[in-house]
Length: 450
Image (cartoon, rainbow, N blue to C red):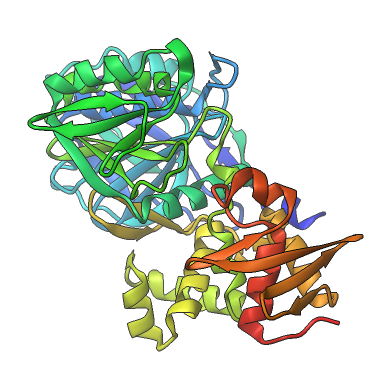
């Protein structure tokens, strides 16, 4: 079996999820040979918000915006308990839309929250039931193998195998790195947000729009300016429409304007005791899994990066809140080593980032960090180049020989650029090419080609 095949996780559902007498029971799964447990069971305080958020995640998971269609297959968001809150996450089928529902301790009544990560099954019967949840309806949620329900569960046991594909791992990893440089740019009440959403989600032209704060409101433009938020293929934001009437405020997040024709944007709906975060990629045709923004960090790591990632993962089982500074303080590693270990964990789906709280969080998925190269073909190719004598330091940078061609990797600002055709097309917007990653590896390890 190939390394990539080994990275696929099979999930088994012992019975169907359902809504019974106002009690939401989610059938949870766990990987083979991993102890299963229930890490939350209790009432939620805002049933319509929770039901609406789960419906939105199901819609995201089933959406393929490249073909303008949806499916009932693949509606299996990842759910994580960190001891204080629950997080439900999903990626669209096309990979360009990421959604997360955060339920804080205040939302989760007085019930204790354990730690764990699994998948939940939002099947068609449950989806239909969630659409009928009203604001006054009590909603009790149980996440784990041993479901808790006030009413009698009326249904047969269902064993459902659901693969969690490698593209989800890469997508979740890239989402984390895209959100790190984001700052809040515009906060507006939910009412005006309806008008904003209608304006930017129009399908006409499919041109990237930029939203700029203007007084107490905003204005939109087709040109990037300082402080602007990009909205690329904004019709994808329609998944937020059912949630807007329930929100208190909407905050738009964006990285610094770089001059690129389109950038990632973040939309956070605040419900008081819960939040819904939506991340929009740079285009319908650009899924997060293909961006490769983590490759520079992965390439700059030490030869023992996999062992570092395992050690860091053990640390995170104790403290689920992480950032590079705290990693360095706990381990004594320098910034590059800490960044590489975090990147390896992110690539294995172990690390997420909450842009609203500006903090990272642990997501303990059952994947080994040493499968990182199999999940990133560019990294695997770069490692081959760096060990085959194809990377030679020069006065201008590095000469990288790949096949019958030699490319020049040279410094540009704080990073590198390359003379290859792939770099000329993407200019680093989809991560570094394999030649740049190989040069980073050689520069970090001090090896010489030839």
